Length: 335
Ligand code: NAD
Image (cartoon, rainbow, N blue to C red; front, side):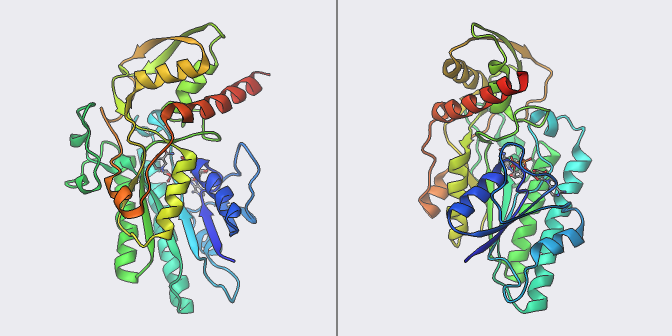
């Protein structure tokens, strides 16, 4: 039986990955600062640990003989959030320090385990982000360029993006110098049920679903960050998990986009949620709110070519599932 370790398994993508790996018959150990908020973990073992602590990481990575090492490690643990957390500048030191420390600890602990036992079988997945792409290619909302080859000269618009760029290079360095098998994704706005929807770290689709769910059945006004003309694409969680599994099963070891190419403005995103909810929504724009780059869209040419994978679900289909779930959360919180 294959054994997988999921770091950040109490979070959105990590908890979905644990479910998928269990469905595929893996034995799974899961680590996080907290248990999943919205459904009980299905991992075989779940440990509450702080991965900034190197001993905690070593304890997490080692298995009893004769296995010694995991077949696969999924590294999702990071200080993470939407524009209200990442783009204000208020959390930059923690974002850079915490996430980089976790990645440094994981890679060097695995190197020690490999050297101690004379093995090198563990494949490591790293959850990078489209936030590492340079701002200068994302100024035109109609025409952003996020091809993998456009990463340099680097100029991400946030410290979160700089840390993601550093850490993908860190994983590549361990691949080059220690022969670690690695898989590195650049995720583009993953959304869906059981994602953070409140509290300041939620991302745009969840925030908009929440605001509209809170309106009366007739509808009403919601606050929108920026002029709403900024563009993005959004990938539904099930498709993100599928693409990530395919990447792990391939031998492709360069950073690769995992996203959707269905680019919309934030105003269009609101119009879709309005239609899904059946509520009339008017917008009040908060022009001094943090918004990130002006335009961003995934470029899937490389992943289509290398893995034969592409997104299939329309944004409207994904938002139907997501709005339904967030609406239930809002109603449950009100009662
Ligand atoms: P999330 O915040 O839901 O999950 C991250 C988890 O890491 C949280 O449960 C958190 O408690 C845990 N964590 C943080 N610090 C830790 C520590 N010191 N020790 C142990 N656990 C710790 O975020 P997510 O949306 O599931 O994202 C997962 C990964 O994918 C992150 O690395 C994120 O940067 C990356 N990513 C996500 C998106 C997206 O749209 N969701 C886009 C690009 C990249």
